[in-house]
Length: 231
Image (tube, rainbow, N blue to C red; front, side, top):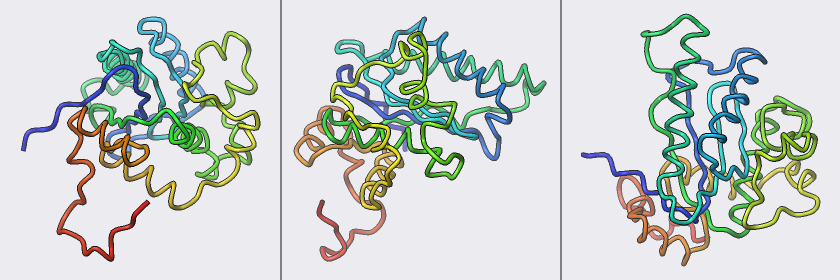
């Protein structure tokens, strides 16, 4: 079955994810993370994609981005250069050129409604290291947007764009509070399938616009009505 073309339209916010190939660790030491952040700044100079949030973990990374209206190619252009250049430099640094892929493949993405759903995704991304037990507080993780947002210099904060839905005043406290299991399950389903994340009407409209209706259908055998959870 041919792979469906990635559907990205400028003007919507998107969650973007990529993972290392197999059991590879993308980041083994602080210098690896620092190289990632330097590369991020380079990519942003080449393609000024609006970055709302990001987090780099040991074997994957998350971004929340907001391409400009009319720039449908902006996300692909940014991450194509970013992942290719990171792969080349990773191989050169580790002496593994020609020994396989660094990433599983192209990035995965899903569109996000510019309301409380966007805040939930940004919170999910910035809370990731805390959820994984890597830090005591989310802002202590050095390799993500929350630390840059609350502790960074003016120059460091300039990498981040203001989201279309303003962050609450007590954002850091909010990120450090656990998300509900229902919200996490909904987000993980969107990550797994590329399903739009928003209210019911918005999701149906955007799914039709971006040819993502298949992401709304359950996988496998049809479920009984009693098994279907209505949000």
